[in-house]
Image 1 (cartoon, rainbow, N blue to C red):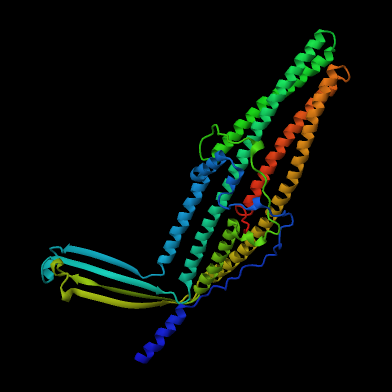
Image 2 (tube, rainbow, N blue to C red):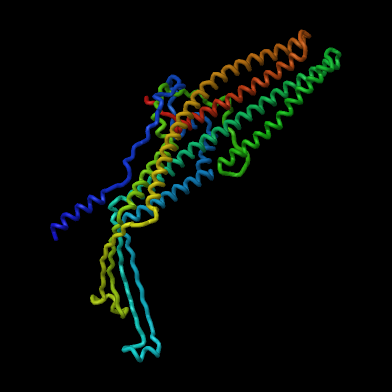
Length: 466
């Protein structure tokens, strides 16, 4: 008996270490050695991944993002899903441990008068019972452990997904705020140009009344002024809509949004370090979430394979039972039981086989999803780099063009006063200058949006070693 016991115990321990899950290997993804559009490194190229938005130097933006992270309804949904996944992991892990239950029952009976004379004893009866039971499944093939691993990876995936949502929300708030600042600047430009055009209109009216200018010039001046005036209500409408959209991101009802710095004064001079390694994308939450889903699917294969093997369960119970409640704790009322059970699937109508096929197909799906997620991450980073770099070049050109057109507008106005040019040249110069200023603001907004997109594509920024 002792020899058999010494052989059986190590055997059971070795079987308990069995794991039917395939050995996890991260899928191969062809990664670029460095970013093709990266610029030279500079002292300003270090970004803090957790609070990258603070690099823009706008305290109002910082407060808006803090509010959104605390109050946004999508973030609250994500937090609730994490709690659900954590609770599900606790439910799954509980199956790895013995299940202990306690019970107490008391039954009183009274037999009928018809049956009592035929039976010895009193008509009344009593039965009291107190028990403590234990049940435990020997996880010899790793079914429960793999189910626990799958639930744990799902929890990690939920946490990574919440981090991805966080970065997305931060970038959405920043982009919406920058667009609001751009609309503010466009409205300011429109009002300044309207004031200038009204002065031009008054001057043309005086010249017309004095017989120096034609009625055609005066009519053209009025038309130009009204065109600019009509753009102001549309810009005000867009500002209101943008504030409403930003308010929803902040988790509150539509309403006004405070402003901080002017769009012209925001910090935008960020340089991406040359040769930024593609391994940096491994900290992108969506990539980590996709890999966690893949590991979960891998563990589910192990659980599905283990279902083909016998389930061995141990149960035991101890307690007291007596026909008299007052004698329930006496030694003579003690009871106990021990049992071992084995259940081997024989015919399940193909259920287990199809469960395994389903788990294997799910893993193939997660492999493709992981590879696609990584490829999208590479593409978004390359897109962000080229967009930011080329937009910077456009901004510089547009600013120089706006400066030149401002000088041309001033010169054309002086030449018209001296009678050296037609009023159409003045109007053309004013229209070109207004459009050039608006183009600069649009490109500034695009540059800020592309910068935010690059931060998000890199999982919240980059960190350069000193």
